[in-house]
Amino acid sequence: MPGQFYIRTGFYVLLSAYFIACGEEPLPNIADIGGAPPMIVFDSGAGGTGRCQIQPEVCNLEDDDCDGRIDEDEDVRVQVFSDPNHCGACGARCEGPNAVYACQVGECVVASCAPGFLDYNGDPQDGCEADCVITAGGREVCDEQDNDCDGLIDEDFGLDSDLVNCGRCGVVCEDIVNGVQACVDGQCQVDGCLTDWHDLNEDSRDGCEYSCVLRASAATREYCNGQDDDCDGYVDERPDLTAPEFECGALGVCGPECVDPSDCNEGDRCSGDGVCIPETVDDIPCDVDRDCLAVHPGLACIAEIERREGDWLTRRICQPRTKAPMCDGEFGYRCARSADWQRGDEQGRCDQLDNDCDGRVDEDYVDQLYLADRQTSRSCVSGVGECRNPGIVECRANGDGTQCSTQPLEPPRPIDDTCDGFDDDCDGIADEDFVDAVVNFGDVQIYAYEASRPGATDDAEGRDSNPADDIITWVGGRACSRRDVLPWNDVTWADARDACRAAGARLCTGEEWARACGGPEARAYPYGNSFRTSLCNGQGFDADPNVVGNQDDAVACGSIQSCELNGMYDMSGNLKEWTSDTIGNLRAVRGGGYATVLAGGMTCQQDNDWKDRLFHHRSIGFRCCRDAP
Image (tube, rainbow, N blue to C red; front, side):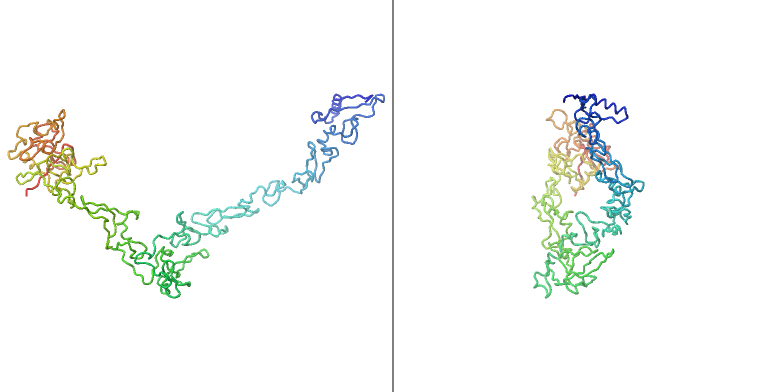
């Protein structure tokens, strides 16, 4: 435009300095709030004086900055950011009831409220709309008032769970009897009961009013005993009972009393388990079954127990009989019988019948027929010795007891004369017919050979009772006298004595043994008076000449022909032999053995070798004597 010129930013800075010097609030830099830098227009056509006095543009419907525009947005932006009379735009006044406003970044906000009023909803358009007076020092108490004037009433109290303000202020959940109280969803309730106490009526006013000892289990809720086992206020209720497995008169001599209605009198019906019962039953009190049977043979006196006004009431009334066990209160399950029933005799009868009508079969023989689990049959064996035949215990055919289900086997041999440890003739005694090799020496019979075990051979000391277990356990029994078998060694004095007794003999005395060893001539050794190492089995004797070296061990009975006198073998050497001579706990051994070194230890007259009666060793054996017939 002719005659005009423009001064931009620098003049604006001078204006800012002017307002600061005059104590006014400085205007923000235009760059901070956006918009074009200010433009100041001068008109030079009037001698340089201008037609407009330049001032900062404010909301007043005037062109304060002489730019030809009024209240332009970019020039009044600072004002509309903070002036509550022009908040966000010129003329946009912040106002509302009972409120003092401020403008923050072009938005009206309530700076303060008139006394007694609050801005509850936070909306500046309706000002301070609520009338509230702070009470209780501005601390919230439970009185259904907004004490701290925050728009919330009793917000610091959990009325749903507060024991002293349950549901409403001042409602206290009092202590309850035999239990613990709680406030749940604003209601006073029983939270738990002491042991053996229960809240049946669900009324917290009387607390846990029901005393009951809980006896129920996961498997059994209620027992038939006249007591409330599951503590639910009912006694012996049928849905919770577990009936016993036995039946009353469904087997054997205790069969059904009826099969169809024709078996019953007129007006009766045949129940599902075979009892004639009346169509209808009156409420008839009773004491025992006899009272009910007099009214009708199909009735029984059964207890009914119910809870009334906190107490248990027991009464007995007539009810239809069943073949199944009936729950009769404190009497438990029992079988109700007809008027003409008489107890049968189960004792003495083992016949798979329920002879006494108690629902059980052969119960008096259960320990004989079964193991402790009452299911597994007991095993048994018929016969003895080699006639043994395994089976199970069963009732006898005539019902008068039990027997084994098998019969004995036939004896493999008519007589038992082998000395093998087997009872071949099945008489309960092994080898009783075996004839021992003996020598009569005056009034005594003495074993011709050192005693051997039953079943011994020339390479085994006896018969192993269980060869499959890899543990050698020699069969015991009678002592045998026979040739060419290994002698019985490693034996205590008592075992040697018992083995002789089983053979109908005894241990020899030391004097008997010495006389038999030396003969009538009383020799020092069976072969003479001079010691010879090669004639009897001492330490100097080679037990096995086929093996290099000198082996010291017992050899088979009678296998050394040179160690014999009058038909008796190995009385010097092989094994030392127990005798019956006794001094306290000591017992005498005679004759020396395969480990004896000194010649004197192998003489027939040697009498100074004593061993403890419990001693045993592989070098010690025995032989037996009998009084001559």
